[in-house]
Image (tube, rainbow, N blue to C red):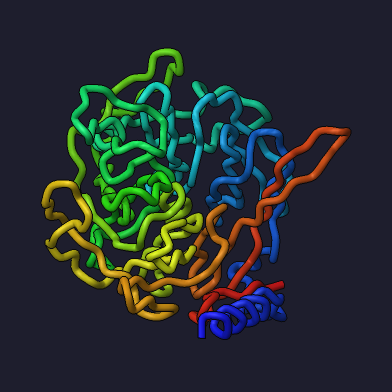
Length: 375
């Protein structure tokens, strides 16, 4: 039975990757079927954001932010990060781009806030266009001495330290409070989670929600040699989605008005007792319920999220999800249309570089792959 199922899923996945014919309705606002983010030596593409009103795209490449127009022409870039720049999202209320920014060796994690109107040329200094807000909750979980031996083991996956297996942060998205499809807008930040098959307390995606209306008072330039600690004392909500352990948690997070759900794209997990899907959705209309956070060394209760119906379901664990490659970048455009990042490599003048393409997809909801490419 397992062999037949595997063959069926593989065949269905192959069909889903075929490019569907495009119609005018498939290209909201006349958006192109593909936008090229360039080729860079800065590491693979991590996330994307779009400003449709002003006509710009933004790509993060580990330690570089790239700004293009909607035809893929370079407008400017921000370079020189020594930390890890991850997922991005545009704040529709202030027009700035927010992204996750990690400095694991300094045990510091931030939301980077880019004044993107000021990005007008290549290789701009982050200090000229970026402010940061320190996330104390993330630092506390990342540095937690879970085995009580009096020392923190640092950036190591194979250790009992790091509460919930926290490796930092990656996915970020603006959207309503969990359980309220039309609720107050929050910035949602997803933990990175180390892949570790030898522990049981790392099987949730951990998501923090922040009301950022008063964040101006925390925003500071970042001096990488002396990271600041200016940020909110507490979160406005901390939530847990049971998916099974994944490799570095939610890589890309996106609230999708079309489905009313929160999309989570991940790198495949390695625990054999879980189905190890690569795409999950949190039901945006289901109120978080208070319950036990499974697997913790001491009994702990928290706010539990519900995975959205549909897709594949593993009866043994109750986990639902899909198979899809949205971990390099995902943008909801409305009406069931999306930009999904394709990561690649090219060699130019003997130098290996990473590329990023934003490619247009439509939602189908089918299993095992719920999107099909357009164009």
